[in-house]
Image (cartoon, rainbow, N blue to C red; front, side, top):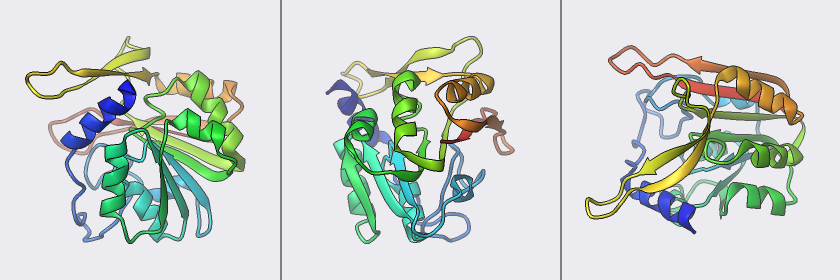
Length: 220
């Protein structure tokens, strides 16, 4: 599977999560691409016993944090390398990991979830016309969908190409991503039956980098 191969390559490049964050905590939730920045797990509105699904869980840092809060944490990733890394890093943390493509998992599982989320994950890299209806079918009434990704480049909307570099002797691997402005995400979510949709760009922290983070939230 080309998509899995690309994300396996990405897994090898991505640095491991720090042992602790700036507050000295071993687990934490981070929606943005910047360390110790932005809101946390409160965006999901979950409590102990809630069932939460992460689409594109990567190496499992955000999911592990939810598990420490007493959440029934389930993660899905198409990359076997990512799943193995998550299982190794968080072997003592009670969470369930599946290697699967996001839409396939949603179509095949019979489980319902109080929240579904994605942090620079599968929601960014899956056609929303296919993924959003699949998520809504799995969300329990009043459940929350939340996801974050980079804001779109002005004028570059819809399906775009992302490149994952490999060695100097190998061509980059290409995956598709879907970029929309905040207002368009609200429209898409509403069109697919979600309610109370909001989308905002969180400003980058002070410093030379100015690219913010798009954070989107809606109810099923």
